[in-house]
Length: 113
Length: 116
Image 1 (spheres, rainbow over the protein chains, first blue to last red):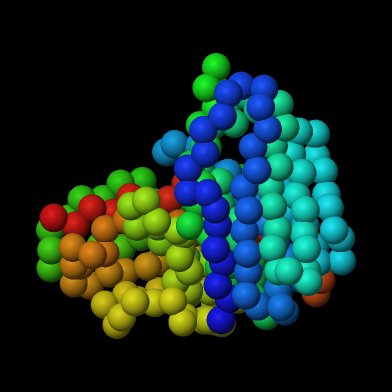
Image 2 (spheres, rainbow over the protein chains, first blue to last red):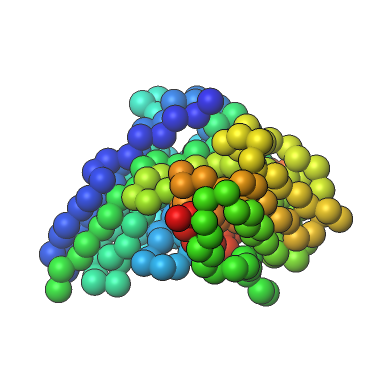
């Protein structure tokens, strides 16, 4: 089955700095890579995702890059703001496109004003 | 469009008791998933329904857990009897049944289960 490793487990930055979270996956059949943000006490929410036929995707201050050869993908947040503070999870579906997501361990991001 | 809803939001029970969690997916979503997050760890898959059928139950910890989705609408997850290690936040998610590769899953707010 799929195995997803996520680093770092905690990340502390100053407001305005950039933050990068990295994930690796094991199943080369994975073709869809979502990132979820979970604020304290709230539900995980999809913030950006990328399909395997694309190397990079950007949405305002958030971008995701994918390296299929190396089997890793990264979340980049620029100009961080205090409201970006949350737990971020990466995920991959393995060989089943409509099935379960295997999540990384999560990264606690803290943005200091 | 109403999001995924879950009930109850919190449940505190004693070891050996029974608890039933409910999930109402987004209307029209045939895929329904159950996940669990134990304190400070990753979100782990439990079970996947396609309509009323169990597509994948490889993540169910043991036979104390029983999930149902009668009629292909809402789902219940029953834990009987509950053990201490069952404590955690149980999330439900749903998605459209698509023919393309993107499977955007929408999560509910979760049920925080505490077993004492």
